[in-house]
Image (tube, one colour):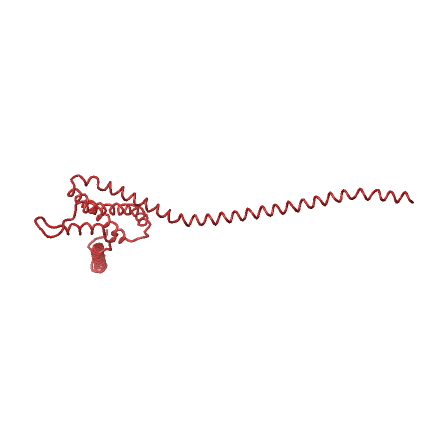
Length: 235
């Protein structure tokens, strides 16, 4: 029977030490790698560029005089509401872009075509837009009670009308070029049609001439026959 006391533990010390060092190294590498990724995620380049409409709105708020101050010109509430509405329109545009990009990004991640950095940037953008929406609703309710419930509906209509107007402008921009192309195309078709008519007319004239020649020959042939008979009678 094999006795466990007969095992040479001294000879196994080196392999166990190697496994321990290897496991510790892997754990240390994994910890440092995760921390580095977290730091990189915190310093990622933002998904969107500067929110100009939000900056304009905040600037208008900063220009408002404090209560009790006599200096400074008070900005009308209508201007501030218009600035907040434009900010909401830009948020609608970003929401559409986020939804459109999410499907494509999910497919690329599943295929392994992009790294985790792009995913972290996208997740940061989603969180940013969520906070932006809450902020806009809060600001809208502060300007007019209950406006936060309908501001994005109005912003969505404005965004849709803007997109439609942009499409119409593109169509009108191509209208003159399309008109010129069609004029040239119509002239080309007209020239080709006239050439076909001239060719058909020339073929018809040639055919009429050939038919007249055949009739003339047929009429001349009977006249030659009686002359031969007269000559035979003289003989």
